[in-house]
Image (tube, rainbow, N blue to C red; front, side, top):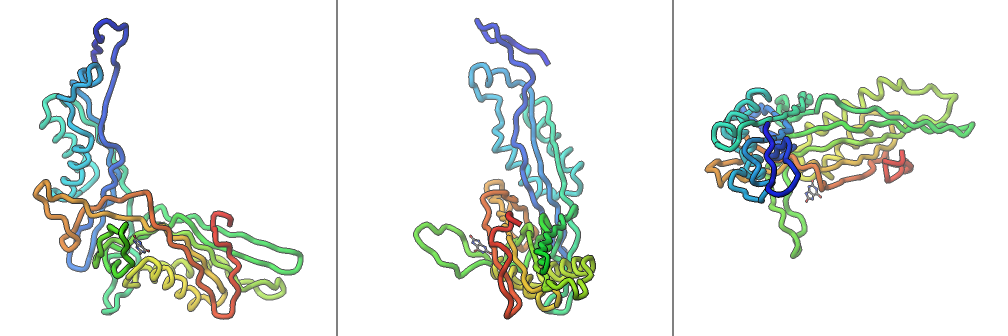
Length: 313
Ligand SMILES: O=c1[nH]c(=O)c2[nH]c(=O)[nH]c2[nH]1
């Protein structure tokens, strides 16, 4: 890379690149009721004849970073995502061959892998639209003993789950600041943080099988997530908690903190591409801000003892 000096200043521009970083693109493909998911974090870095924009501010050679972002989403819709490598090669070739001033494109992609959550739909069919992100969770526990009584609160965090359909959100309050559109088919995704308190307090009594309890509690929670036809994340949360209380006698209380990981349908109309949920769609996976839905689900007659703020536990 040659550097050019700006006139009358003892200063040189060195290596430079630009582009849109961390485009969080989620592509759902529908094959009947079987859905497939591709979840990528795509960063574009372009370089070439970019001296002028740095030296004088002329944008004549600058393809906007916003355009590079749009290209990522439009390519995901138009060509699909067969593999991260194929997708990256396609993008890099596009930028270098379609824009004369761009001589080099570097596309970095992280891919997040998902596996299916087992569940049975209301129709008795196996659920094929519910996923849990690989890499999975961190298991947690807190033990308190005052010399007499035990309190065991266990749980997990960082368990990312996603339903690519069977989620609606409508009928909510609207005031003059409400712009949200009602939806009858959306992605529902969250990163589960949960704590559950065991009824076991008397050391003289046999303790639960902690490992078995953990595995089964997680399984019931995931199944409830997959099997609930959701009208709100609040409703899904309650079903997840209720399923645990109903199936695990050793647990009296569950508290959840569920961020609503919003997935926005990308508007691809300007590029002549129809992007709707029915036909397999491309979403922007937004990281913030996020809705945060939190609640405790209790066994009837039990006391709520898990603190409201799970970061304190
Ligand atoms: O499941 C949801 N619950 C909400 O309370 C809410 N609010 C919002 O804007 N979207 C959603 N989704």
